[in-house]
Image 1 (cartoon, one colour):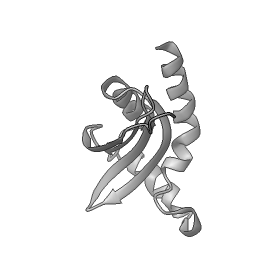
Image 2 (image 1 turned 90 degrees about the vertical axis):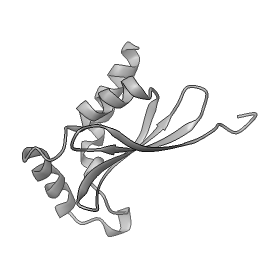
Image 3 (image 1 turned 30 degrees about the vertical axis):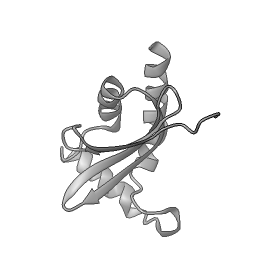
Image 4 (image 1 turned 90 degrees about the horizontal axis):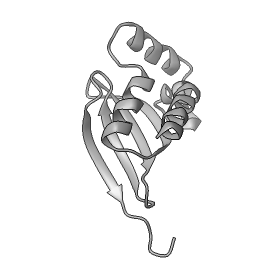
Length: 112
């Protein structure tokens, strides 16, 4: 479990910038990072590290991608995980309180 926590710490440090980019790469607005930082400073969202630690307790797996988006006036972390056994999971997490508000899982393909 130590290696999982170490990986989360490394990912959290490396992903913070990318988590702030809510738009697709071709339409990235530099102000997205500033909006996310301001939301964190204002207490509107939890730090990504705290969210990833909670997610790891509830739904362990390797974090593949994190996005921070604003949907219907609510900040949402969209987290994609690779679960033990190869299943891919997409989680929607309320960025304000860390609660998982939605998930979708795709089983690993047979033979892979």
